[in-house]
Amino acid sequence: MSRDNEGGKRQLQPGYFSRVSRVMGRVVLAKGLPNADRFSKSDPYCVIKAIRSNNNQANMFITKTIQNTLAPVWEEEFDFMVPESWGLVELVGLKAMLFDADELNVSWQGSEDFLGGSDIDISSAVSGRTVTHELELGGIPVHKARGRKPRLTIVITVYRETVPKPPAPDQQLLRSLQEQTFIREVSGKVLSAKGLKNVDLLSYSDPCCIVRVFLMNGEVREVHRTRIINDTLDPEWDEEFHARFDALEQPLLIAFDI
Image (cartoon, rainbow, N blue to C red):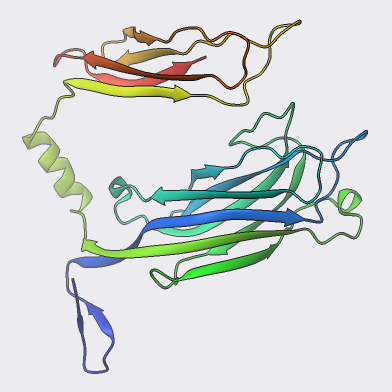
């Protein structure tokens, strides 16, 4: 909670803190990118990472690949909600990185052909204000840049909220010893995939998605297997799955294999 002090400024009450809770954005376009391909132009895509106050990063958004261009236009929107589990670790910035796609596949880790990147500081951003950023991209080797000054246009809106500070770590540990929580059921839906690697010689792949759960007791259990969709690298399954567990077989991790 917050209140006005004598100077008219908003002041947080004890036990509360203000944090970035949501980031909405739109990756608009880039121009002047270096060429990473020998016989054609680059196939660029953009990766957006969340920069946390502990210097760790989290995946936020990744665009599709635009083929054979040094001036891609994406116009792709994203909406990122900051998990409450981050606690006092705040979202303080965004990292935008452009890469040349390998066989049109996109990856959170990027590729060997880096086309430039830039950071955006949102630690003091005004809540609800939409800002258009014209970013000059850096980090490009001189032999690739060739005098170019590549730029990325991205639109960002930051939302803040005032929330109670989480308990101290020793209090959280004590509470966890007093309370036990079990996962009884996991439900989900396998929607689709895009940009899959082609493993067939004369046609496209015939993908199927297998959902497995890694349990605390060491067991790996298959909980769902989608239907096979023939001859496509962009399958759409739209299939639900449900799995129930008892107290002695608690799930730790869900894996999706295509």
